[in-house]
Image (cartoon, rainbow, N blue to C red; front, side, top):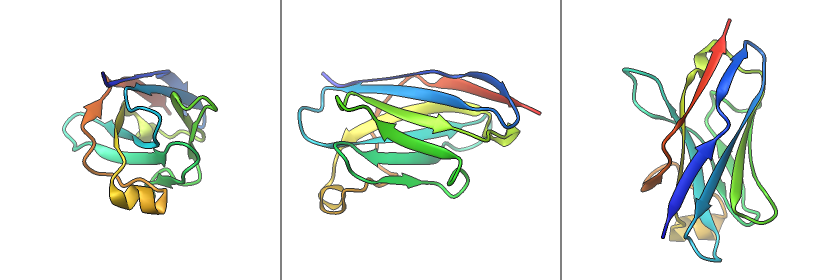
Length: 129
């Protein structure tokens, strides 16, 4: 049974750091895709970063490139989003999502930002100025 759950949100000041964790299970031993997304009230959900598990490459939205880093633990069950140099505009509910890797994902070892079907409940990140 697939399960996705994130944790680690909180409140920090402008320039601070937070690390979010995502536990995604039920995808078997093969590599799969994990993505981080965020949403603020009245706006569409925004893609933040993706990772092809098992040593694949990360991808980042331009808005977070150079400040955020997505990674996984050696056991492959946890994916992290390290957020540095946080800005007030990073304030949002952050969601972790996962899905089976597509043929394109497997061939490139990089995950796309679409078609995620399994989602966590979300965790609030608030950055004050």
